[in-house]
Each structure stands twice: as C-alpha cells, then as structure tokens.
Length: 466
Ligand code: ARG
Image 1 (cartoon, rainbow, N blue to C red):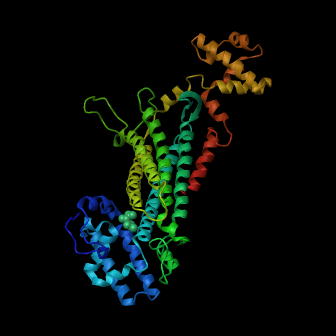
Image 2: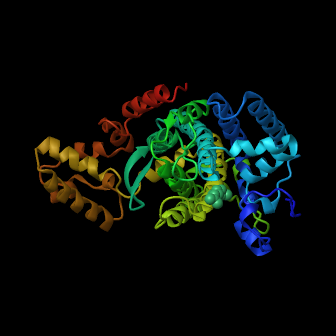
Image 3: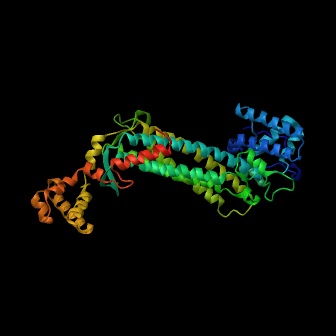
C-alpha cells in the first residue's frame, strides 16, 4: 500500500485542511476492500455503458472510460495496481487511477451514482461469486460422504443418545445424516443467492437520481434478476451479507459436529476409524501420537465464523437509514468467513475420502450397553400383544438382572427369563443380534440396509453423482 499524499481529490471542494493521518487510517477500507476490485470495474463498465445508452455520456466518453477500466483490471490482475491509503477505498482508488489514465473524462463516470450504491453492488457481486464457490465445495463433500456410505452399508456401529450406546446402526446411516444436513446448507446458500440477486445500482446516494437512468439494463448486464425497488433499501440493507454469514455459521456448525465425532472416533478408546497421514499430524515429543488436527481446526474455526455473524448483526442493529459509515465494517467478517469456510470444506472432504473404518471394533462396540434391549421389548409387544410400556418394564428388569450377574442379555438362562415374565421362552434371545436389530429397522429413514440403500439412491440422483 502506498501512503504518499496524492493529488487526486474526491471531495476537496468543501475542505480547507488535510485529513489527520489517524483519521485517514481509521477511515480507510482499502486494506481489505481491494478484494472488490474486479467487481468494481465490472459495475463501473456497465454503469458507463448505461449512461451512454441513455445519452448521458457520449459514446466516445463511454468507450474511453471502459478502455481505461480494462487497463486498470489488467493492472490489478498483474499486481501492478498500487492503491493509496489516502484514497480511502477501492472505489476512489480506481476512479483516481482512471483519471490518471484518461484525464478529466474519468469524473463523468460518477454521474448518477454514489459510492453507496457502488459498494452495495460490488459487495453483492462478490458474495454471489463466493456463494457459487461454496455451494460447489459443499456438493463435493456430500459426494464424498455418499461414496463412503456406499462402502459401509453393512458396517455396524453403535448409535448413541446422550453419547451412551443406544441402538446399533450402520456407519453408512450415520454419514448419510450429514449428507442431509449439508444438502440443506447448500440449499440455504442457493436460497440466499436468490434474494441477494437484485441490483442496487441506480439507488445513488440514497434517494435515487434526477438523471434518466436505466437500472434494469444495469441489473441485467450484471446478471442480477432485477433492479431494487427502493433506493434506501438498496444502499443500506446488508441482510444479503447476514444470510451468507448465517448459512456459513450453520454449515460450519454441522462440520464442527462431524469433526467432534471424528476426534472421538480416532481416540484409542473408541478406535472406530483411522485417518490418513494426509490429514493427521504427529507430536514433537510423543512419538506414538497421531492427532486429528484437521478435525480440531474445523471445530475451532466454527467459533470464528459464528463470531463473524454476530459481529455483523451487531453492526447492523440500530443503524438508521440510509448509509452510515458503520456499513464499511460489513466486509471483513464476510471476507474472513468466505475464506474460512472454503478452507474447511475441502479439508473435511479429504478426511472423509481417506478415512478407514475399523469394522471389527465398531461392531464389537455396538454390542455394548444392552444395545438391542429395545428389540427385545418390540418382540414382546408383537409376540404377547403387550403394551409397549409393560414390555419396557420387563426388559428393564432383565437388564438389571444381567447387570447383577455381570453378563449380557444372551447370558441369561430360561429360568432367569421366566422369573421376570413367566411366558418368556428362549426364542426371545434370538432378537438380540445387532445385525437382526439393524435390518429390522426398515422404516423410511431407518438404518436397515434396504432403507440406507434407498437413501443412497436418492442422493446419487439428487447430487447427480455415481
Ligand atoms: N468504503 C465505503 C464502504 O465500504 C464506501 C462507501 C462510502 N460512502 C460514504 N458515504 N462515505 O462502505
């Protein structure tokens, strides 16, 4: 960044003295809003074309402005563009450079426009682009999860409630729950995109403009669905940015839950999965360690994204219409969030693609904690036509008995069974296998292989993947 005083003055007319250096630093957004450069050029080119179409600029002026802007774009792309702090933001830096390149005609570009509608336009374009990238990355993760599920339709693991072993499920079923969550995340981004996709260009400072502009043309040229209906809304609303942040926060929260499970599953206590070397790290002191750092970082970065959402909500809360400089603080949380979410999504995809389930261990663990006790209760309901509550009582007593005898339910004798409920016979114990339990759950969305296969077929079609 160049900090030398610059001769180009945007509002010089009304001011006698120079801005204080402290103020200049506080006021400047160029340190971060240079990210908008490409979209600022695109918006300005369209604005110039619209002004020419409306006869507000002549064709020669519009061509010269557009050529100048193209030169600036090349300078930006080749790292030759040198923004200056005293020019405050990307918009004024580009305008000043345009004046250097084409002379005073550059000043005509700002006819019927304000930085207020300019920045709102740029920011919408920027976020729209980030949404498209993010949606693609979520899709890749969904596909990875579907593939991993496909390989693990028969991999039995414990399902938990309260993190206590509850009922046996399959690994595929567990992973597919995340596909459903992530798919809603993807739809949330796409849905936000629809609402975002309106053009504020033409709102000018706040009240619209007295020039005969054509905002619908500008909107169309920038691939917006339409021009915004209200100029005050156009310059002062940032709910599109909040929606991007909230969709990111919810998505990050899902990734964080999966990360937490990965962290648990890789412990030697669980030992359910092995991560590849590509997504683990060692310890500088303990040679035996394999740490799931990627999962831990994803879990932690969720805090950062949630923080960004709260930060912008707080900036917006209580802001009167229309523009206030507070709105300049809308960008950093969004920039940081976009970078973070696009960092963590491929890391999760990589972990999922590479992870190997420890099939034996998962199965063994699914037998703990009387995990098929509900199946026995269901059996009693069916065979003896008992109310479920009564069956629940009987099985509860059997579990207590097994605990006292330090065995599992299968270890109980016929005498034990009939001591609790006299009609019981040994066939009741056939219901206790984890495979039987899993495959009996054929309800829609259940954990049986047929239900899981239905889910996989649905996702393959929905995600257009094989
Ligand atoms: N850098 C400013 C921002 O990001 C641009 C808009 C400035 N508008 C104004 N009225 N000072 O919000």
